[in-house]
Image (cartoon, rainbow, N blue to C red; front, side, top):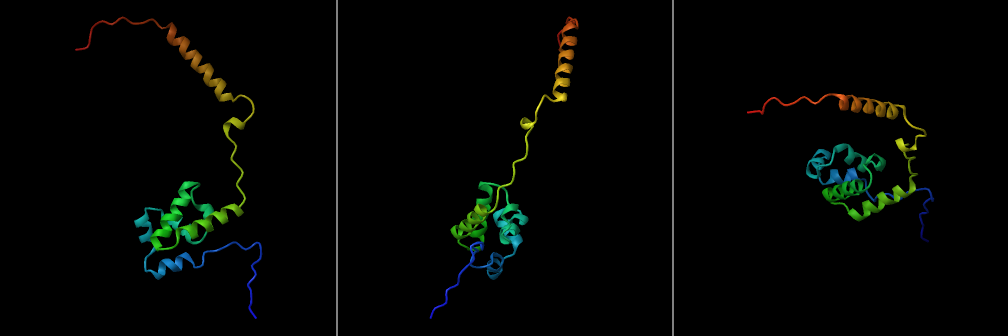
Length: 136
């Protein structure tokens, strides 16, 4: 009789080994990986602890994960597949409101336009001083 392990649907796929243990088994420190890959140690620590939200967005995250996997001799595709599966499960953050989202004209814009207009009219009314000589 064979026993089958059934995973709950909420459990996320994990790499088969802890990344820190793989790195320690080959005998390199996190600082050595940081020097060889030129990736900040806090990003490498985030990869090891699977806190992928602490990584920079987009192509930087995949590049950091790929370089880290190469540095410790781990499968790049397995680690990237795990990262992508985790990224699909996490909800996206609400985008921050931009200046264009604000309603109505801004007071500083009106004030700035009035100051610029006043300065232009003041400069326009100034008499032009004639040149007295050429520089040597």
